[in-house]
Image (cartoon, rainbow, N blue to C red; front, side, top):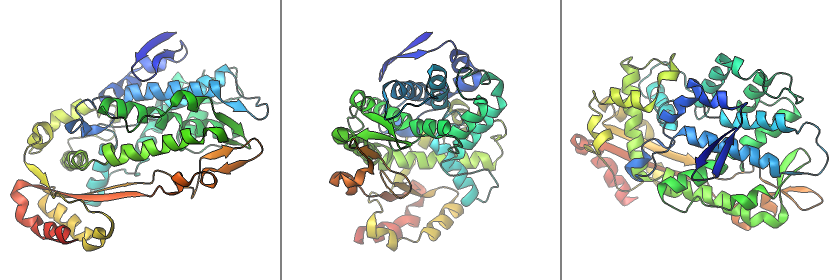
Length: 398
């Protein structure tokens, strides 16, 4: 086994079984995919990558499996199954392209603003690309879980990472890596908070590990640990409000998305060769474009200082702004932030009181007060001040 020293979790163990996957070029490329795109324009320490986040998610998945308790005996949990689930967590982001979610935004801009026929599946775009890579390198996974109930480990990975579980084993694994409380969010809240130099994303991970229980086909939290759940969900909300949705972070990621869309329009990026689409490659291409100064040196672009929130959305004509983006070729940009920190519409955090499982809202008045987060910003090149005066006046009076 290899041991990696990690600032968030201490030591992360990589078994001899998993080491060839971590060492392979298709996973190593995540070293060159930034976790939070251009957030370092505001939080200089946020230079971390999808590589260490993926190792952290793998570690937490294994930890959750080691600590979780079971109301009834579950036959399929053994060491090989744990390895397979932890590899699912390891590979959950393997399909991310340069600058992570900002590249997905660039695909959206290229398709919806400039009419380019590109593959875009919303926030699931990196998942779709990741599934292709797993199929391409399927020979690396076909011996995983050999002493578990899983007969086809590649299919298991595809179903779990693709959020399309077919069996109890797959459903359980899916809940470990993709849920309101999961190995993915569990790692990125702590990691992003650490590198941003803020405390918004902090929560008691050691306590959380020890209060999980699998009951009635659900992963639940013991009732006595409700404050830990509240802390976790509020940490996520605060990170979105203060870091991910910071207006200046959004501004530079919006500019970057238009720069990448411009490269796509000019056929400088080959989407069939996704393994070569790293931050370094994209940045080297941007250096030769008009987007060089704003993205490298924070020069040339401004934003209307008042964000678009609440009733102000009804005062702004989004279609008009999209047309202005198209007309000015990205010298005026409308960018919208949206997230639902917690909702029980389709899924929920479950609480176990020793007798039955109930949704968190039954116990927590704090959580029921969490609302959707939504705001918009208008960004413009300094040569376009006349074009945005109208919107500045609207927002001043809103």
